[in-house]
Image 1 (tube, rainbow over the protein chains, first blue to last red):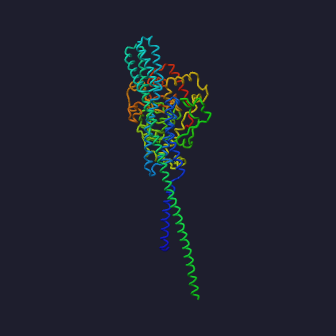
Image 2 (image 1 turned 90 degrees about the vertical axis):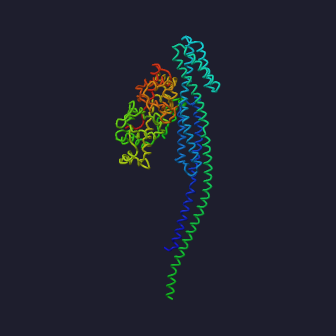
Image 3 (image 1 turned 180 degrees about the vertical axis):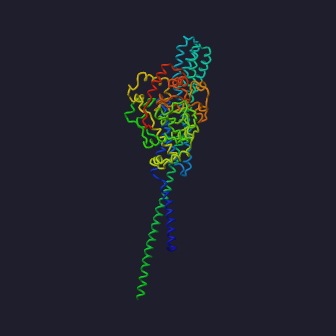
Amino acid sequence: MNKRWIYHALAITVASAGLAALYVNVEVVAQNHHIQVVNELQDLKRKDATLNTNVFSIRSGLTKHYDDLVKTNSETEAIIADLREGKSRIVGYGNSDINQLVKQYEGLHVKRNVLIDRFKTRNSTLRNGVYYFPLIATEIVRRGPEAGASKELIVSIEQLLKSLMSYYINSNKAVYDNVRNDMQNVTNLMAAAPEVLRPRLLEMMKHATVVLWHKREIDGLLRQITSAESASVADSLFHVYQIDHRNAEKRTKVYRAGFYMGSSAVICYMIFLIIGWFQNRSRRRAAPAQQTTALAQ
Amino acid sequence: MAKLVDSPTESPAAVVNSPILPLPLTIQLDPAKVALGNKLFHDPRLSSNDKISCASCHDINTNGADNKAVSTGINGGQTAVNSPTVFNSGLNFMQFWDGRADTLEQQVDGPVHHPGEMGSNWRQILPKLRADAAITQNFKNLYSDGITVANIKDAIAIFERSLITVNSRFDRYLRGERNALTKSEQRGYQLFSDLGCISCHQGQAVGGNMFQKFGVIGDYFKDRGNITQADYGRYNVTGDEADKHVFKVPSLRNVELTAPYFHDGSAKTLQDAVAVMGKYQLGRPLKDFEVKGLVAFLKTLTGEVRSTRR
């Protein structure tokens, strides 16, 4: 093999490597993957909204169990895992904004989980408190006079019953302050209450405390859960991904054009080489024949 | 993740907004992986002395647990808390009493590494399993990358997810079979609902989907005394004061068979457990007829284990 052919082989190898690099970049935008990612990102936003609906539905008593909430949560986690390292992976492909947003969403989800767990715990306790407090309060009001309770105590309990139930439905600062005052009044009168009523009074006040504190805490938790930043981060992630995808598509078009042009050039070059090789071979075959003819002459 | 399947006839409209939901009669899992997980679950090579398997504390031929207040691990070591039943564990939203593992796969690491339980690690376990031609082949058939830590955990978790206790009398009642429960059991369910037990024990697993403080109204730990680190529950995971004495609400399915009760195994009978719950969670000492009614209802939650037993 002469030197010229080594140069040709080298040129083809370099050109093929270049084409392979272009091909890899052409393949970056896989439409199936893109569609899958878009679906996942939209699903992430939907799950975010569903989670809020689950929480409100539980709080209002329309849903009487936490399974739907837990399920939505697990599905959200599965989507995050998929975006991070699964079939719809978008993390670790060089776009720091996307990496950052996925990380941020994950962090917010973890924080929201803590709030949701607390919400479930408090909500269950509150439900029982709201059931037991009026039950015990009305029982004491009914039995109280017979057991020797003062009229003042009975009136205070009735007042607490009204204010606490009102607070449960309509929680605002004024009603909250009323409840605290009414609780204080009952507590002050408890020392003079008949012995026989005291255990029930203590029980009643425990439930009243549960309702007051848990209602207040749950209101706060609901605000935090439903106004969580996660929805806007999911929106941003979707937006940033779309921009990234459009840019990748533009780049891909350039790479694809380069790939096609490069491929055509390599093919032309190879055709040129093959033609050249055939011509050389014909020339080489023709040369000895001419020599033989010349010798014969 | 296991896919729970219900045929359309299994969920009558009456069940839709019920606080307790029936378990599906079938569950879609790869049977070959379930079988492999079953083998691993019973394999003592997962412990450092080759004597303790998962099944040592979670006997699937009885109640999925071991009927002891606390379990015995390698070299006679004892666990800090009661072993919960493995039945229906796939329905739990988190694993362990304190919820320190999010999934069954993560949970496997706990007992394997715990010095008082199996006292082992994956570097010890992998060569032991790889030396077994049959199990190696089994893994090769089911997983492209053969025996790996992730695949071992996956198989065990899939097997555990298969262990659901279906078709309890209460589920049949929920599905519309009104005479599946006696009148007294129905009254028991009414009590369960009215007294507020259902606020925490709800959903398909009748619990297992939330945390709750042990001692909402009364101070259980003060009365019991001798507080251990394990008694702090979720606090041990989060370090948050609000999580002190907070535990995962256990599932009540098959509860009739899983004595002793609570994380400390302190309640020897179901009656004891119900009475303690009434006092410390609801803030009222339950009357005898209430305890009896509740226990009668709880016994209707016993179902059949569908997975292959060994």
